[in-house]
Image (cartoon, rainbow, N blue to C red):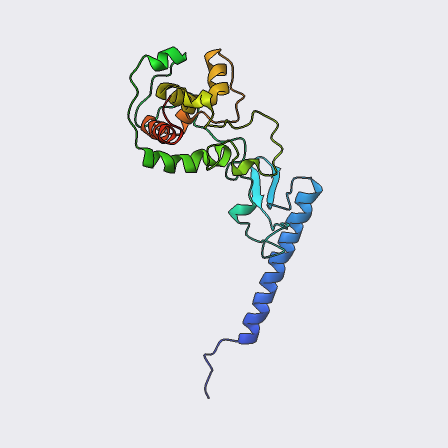
Length: 223
């Protein structure tokens, strides 16, 4: 007499179905519980029963390849997209690894120092990444962000205008660093900036900003 060592496949299948039913029942129970206390976000799957009970449940996003996301992906989570406000800046008072720079309080202070040289080729690349979206490829203030956009704040400057062309290199550096003419003027007066242009002193190194100035000067001409 021989005894088969082959597992009972039908028993394993029944066990698997039972396990799936238990998991499904548990998920449904959690969904009902979270929904009943109003702490379930169906788009992201975030559920909060009460601190510190936070967990993920199946999500029902409006977009995506699957109607139900058992394991929610990062693009369904709350986040800021490229160029979407508010733009994240380093904490106030933080010091870059290259060291802190002097923050001047007037254009005269900026112009009291000799301008530094820059690489216009690198500057163009940096401009394309950081500035083109608002100021445009032609530097005319008509960047892609303006297309079909109801811009209820100050419009991007036309960098080809005489006012910009007649500015010194140190002036241009100050505007790039301080969030444009508006942002710089507000900071000089001790007020919080309302300029839609970021203070690139927080985002780019000193040399990178001088590279942008070099590109602007080559493109718009001498003062």
